[in-house]
Image (tube, rainbow, N blue to C red; front, side, top):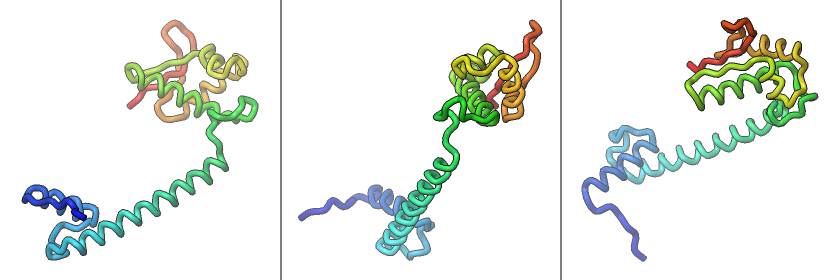
Length: 151
């Protein structure tokens, strides 16, 4: 059974660098003992895997407590949930274009498939304006609008 081992200086240096980086060592702490460094690197990788698993479990628990507003029915949404959805949609539009997006009350009604009344759409625009990147103001033509600017 043969194993492939780096045989040249640059290959050995690359392997050593990877091992020391994974072991979070600077190369002098193990007195160039690669086996000790490799074992330390393996411990670090295993610890990171345990932390990822723990964080994934925490995220799952949080998602069960507070489901993603975009996955909820309109009648289940609170005003802050609706504002979060509006901001998310404006942010997506801004990121896909020139870094800016805007919406008028008709656009808000359309986002929720015609559910909010015009008055409630304006309320939602005001609530969304309190979130980062959003602003509620009057356009030059006199209409009220919600804008998002990605910074």
